Image (tube, rainbow, N blue to C red; front, side, top):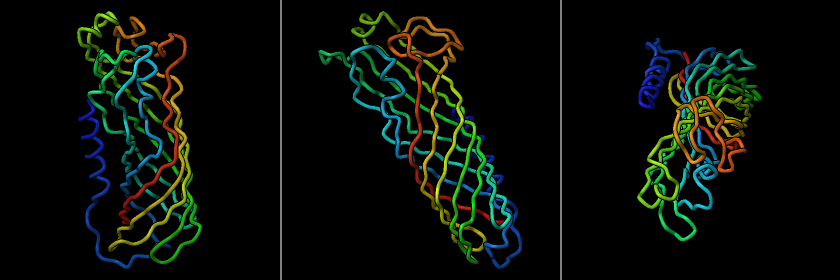
Length: 256
């Protein structure tokens, strides 16, 4: 399913990023009106062990987690001179962490864990052009959107762990949705012909305050049903995943 989604997004991105070639013309940032874009984002705040540490058994230690957080974005830009309007899709996807060992207080390994996060964000933004030259500009970005999160944790028990928890190997899949808001300061300049390069630094608020099970399984909290609220080890506190934080982005725009 993850491969199919990535293929779809890559195909769509290719269609909007590589339109038929136009005749050569002189580039003028003040007169450009439409572009497709591709943008890469790096987030300072990383998930770490937050996707599993509070829901995978009490008094355990884990020898790994997700240590990076980045994603890619593509879409379209409409320029009116003073304000640019952006419509895009961002796929926030930290690298999957595999083979994380869970140990009890005595240091005995009980199971291994794989964890993966994918957050697809439909977004709209406005760039306020603070200063525009012929081939470059300085802008302030304000954006918002709707994020759809998928979190998967897969557990493989050894004989000691299976006896300790009374569980068999299982995979949990959680879903959540949340609103996203962010802002940044950026700079865009001509790279070649009608292709420009952008760089910006900013902050994004994205907090998934409730996660729901998308599979019926027997987990550390006992039997769970599809659609049910996912809880932490105490069985009372709803699980959450906060992906807010500062981010840096670079990108390319292809002005038509």
